[in-house]
Length: 160
Image (cartoon, rainbow, N blue to C red):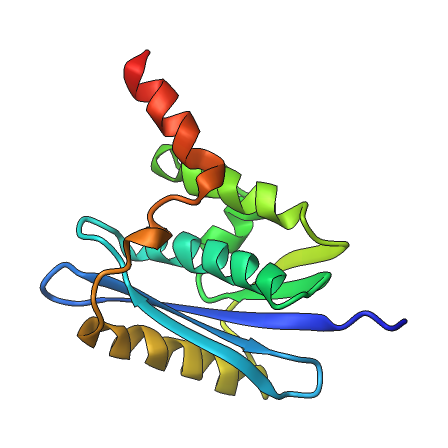
């Protein structure tokens, strides 16, 4: 049985009103678009945090699509460097960083590729960015805030 590698392209954008959006496009190795997601994140979210949330969304949904191998294309080279261990993780991003690292272990093979995309990948990256830009018209999706994996940890921390 041949295992398919799924490619996920993440985009993030911030509006003047302070609302941040993220978009993710999923494509297979043959270049077919499998799924597109665009979401507005809760207030007080930075663009960097939106990129982390987009990567979490990409990894979570890649698993739901049945992928065993995934490549997430990250538009922010600093975020990719933090996840890949090439740069120290900023304190405010430790939670999302741990979510990403845990989800990466759910795959037979998974990696985060730094952007910006080149060549044909540029089309997918632009599509993800367009989804992020268009997501301002959508309602805030609170489900992106915390996955069940970490929500219990945050409750424990707040009562300690």
